[in-house]
Length: 282
Ligand code: ASP
Image (cartoon, rainbow, N blue to C red; front, side, top):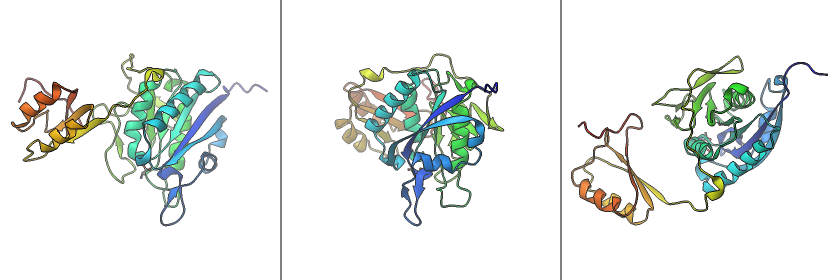
């Protein structure tokens, strides 16, 4: 019988993390995606069919490029089949800022891909996993979330993968987008997108990726003489330098950076974690 309500379907991929932790004391990623889904009050009443895929069971810190490029290929292939409205990835929150951006770089299908996790494991009072899974599935199934690339949904906030960061070690409101703010929020189970991303998203051809350059991250510190910078540059294919403020470095860094930049790409960022680098203002 046609009820007039569109039939919706979401594929969920479990990667492990706190959201899937079980066992008292030393909790480990043990819950299957089916167990995660069964623990979500109200999901059955949404009319959204769920496909479950136990893809990995690792802490967020232990995920790597091979795991995520395999996941990206699996998701894009599933979305290309055309019979799912979106995808959800549940994983450890420690690396969501990296994994969601990597998936975004390879995400070319119009359907939403939503990444979520939990800050409180299922054995704790106020565990946030079930609410985050429900919000992620509701967003993945909604047509308004299409053509936005990969989104990160926790605490009923919707963030762009390219902007979001984990900003607090334990707070349930840890995911913030310091430079842009959230794209929107879930309101009574419906994603309300208030801000828009630039239409053209930078993406890469996943099939053309056959190596993973080793990129070093050096944070400049008070009294830094550049020794760590030199050491790191000998073993890296590229460097990100997290400099002071708007991009300042100690005077002695300049000849070292010039020598390194002649050999490998060097990107100057701010160790503040938000705001612009300046090129003509001290
Ligand atoms: N506490 C982290 C989490 O929220 C651990 C991890 O990233 O696996 O999932």
